[in-house]
Amino acid sequence: MTYEPEVRERLERDAKEIMGRYPRPRSALLPMLHLVQSVDGHVTQHGVEFCAEMLGITPAQVMGVVTFYTQYKQEPVGDYHVGVCTNTLCAIMGGDQIWDELSEHTGVGHDEATPDGKISLERVECNAACDFAPVVMVNWEFFDNMTPAKAKQLVDDLRLGKDVLPSRGPNRLATWREASRVLAGFPDGLAGEGVQAGPESLVGLKLAHERGWAAPSADTGRERPDEPVKPEQIAEPPHEPGKPIPGEAKPGSQEGRNK
Image 1 (cartoon, rainbow, N blue to C red):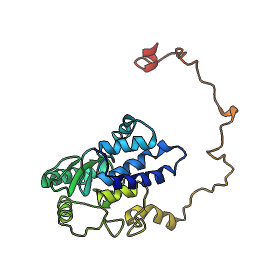
Image 2: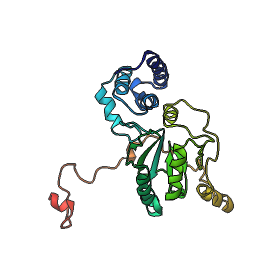
Image 3: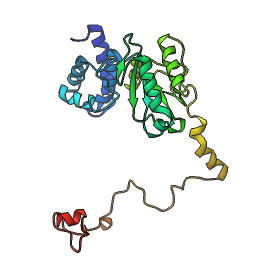
């Protein structure tokens, strides 16, 4: 299966724009995978072959990246991809229960889509929003302080086509394919809309202002971390590599076992 001529033409034009951002073409692979995902809804075999052809690499090299990163989906994804965080803090705050009830409510499991193609679910290891736990994301937009009832109402509203707004983010919820195109590096103009950081995220900054705390000055006489290491700063190894460590080794230690 190949792309229709007009789709292929549009993909090539966008791919060349992406490739032009990098000194080496193959560096464009990550955003290009989001690009083909924005067209097909997931990374298909012809999407893999397109990326390989454009970048001058093998399909196997492309698949090595596809199978490594969880944001690239190899099966169809719903218009609204719902990620439920079940990592430590969200889990103990109710994330596991949200997942169990939402999976039962929709009838689908991890990385599966409903038959109508509207909703897909994913167990996410971290949504990077622990201060709002438990958190659910829809197409990578935040829905904070969730409960099982709120999560089920969320997916019901999405399936009915109702306007649903994230807790923090733009004033319109993008579809999965639209969000994939943004991740490919084609902004939708919505990045500055809505609440960018909630009160919970700003507590540290508020305390710093109240107590007069400030970051250390950059001009403290210390060497900058990007300065090259000087020869005199390199310490000699305590023993010759590959040789037994001198002295007594504690019984049961790795050194002891090596001896």
